[in-house]
Image 1 (spheres, rainbow, N blue to C red):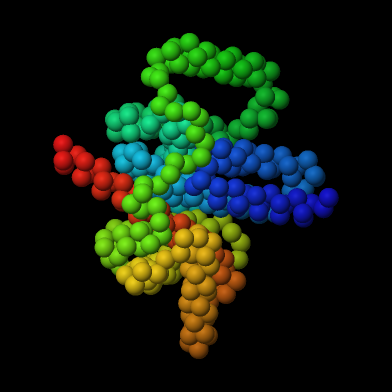
Image 2: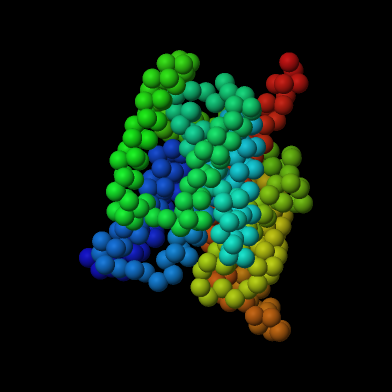
Length: 362
């Protein structure tokens, strides 16, 4: 088996697995987390050290966490938890961008990746219990506990002390026994103290995402909702601009061959977001919609390719220059995230509005 085949198999798996998160949230994100942890070991097993892979590794981490955030918009029934998810996700992305621009590793400690484990915690609860049973305060406590007791020590270990688990186990004789004892103690606390105090489960194990609300589960219903509630320049467009813009800056910093400045990249993405918002709103008001996510992606991607080619033709006649290969890569990334965002954001808005109406009725 060639090392090139192994390399591209791992890379494709790291891009493909996140696409299962919207439908199988907990199993898929755990699979992404595990693959992220063993990919380097797989390469070492085959005696291969791919150049620039650390950069690709960061880019793929950002990608699967972005899909997880979009999955929370699609699936989470508790609006309070969605608000916390939004804050934790964007807080981390701002920290990663700041780190890529400055190289200050302390920023990764100040902006920890609490979102990932919060996502896992929410989905772990949802496997047996209705998340709506738990208040906004409960989810804040969960996020704070993960932030303080899990992520801060982990971020310090990885990014400040720059320690490796395998090397530490090899070099420090007492570390592995202490780690085993700590894990067993945690399991004992969960089994003997936490488990007996849990309320009865609401349903059997659920690893697949719950069905969408009936009023918004069809493509034409989402299109009608957008036509009634969206504008080209609104909070949705602003959030999508920052979502894709920040991720694009991270990709631009870590991937070789990207020559645009961060400001140019962000502004370029912002222009595409606004153009896509205008086209999407025009299509929604005329009732155009596609049930298939693949078809939706194809339409968005083809539209953006046409826009990129037109921009390339125009810039080639003037002083500007557009690197077409880099542009097409970012358009591919943009189209995936934009397609999923446009499909899932109306669902989150619909649920939040329904919750507000219920509260008002009470």
